Image (cartoon, rainbow, N blue to C red; front, side):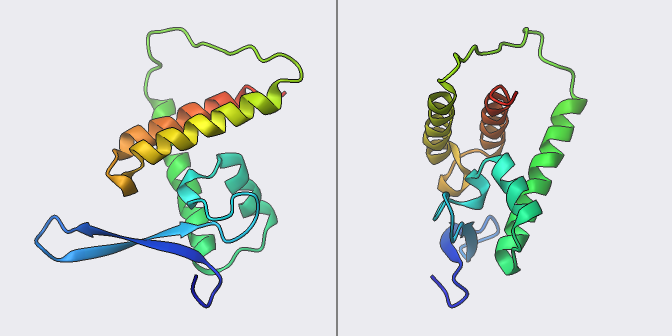
Length: 143
């Protein structure tokens, strides 16, 4: 942890143009219920809440704004594409099981993110799909 109190981790990746190594800094949440979780793995509703209600500063503010902008751009692209030919499927959640359903979504999301996140060698497109599917599942919990 640096003097600013922000949690970051450096991932060194080989440069596509030669043997030079490029360091990529990943912002992690320095507080709250998502302490030490990468900003890119936070639920969208939490990112929006942070953006609207918390006086963020510096690199954390930039990371939250960038992640929200990236997700909104992705969703706009998805909305512009024709829907897939299969019918949409909804999940029925019994009253009282909402917290368990959310916990299952979050656990599945974290497991898939550990496997497919670009920072661990995964594919960006797959990670974006995982983010979208998890968000659609979370939306089913909202009244």
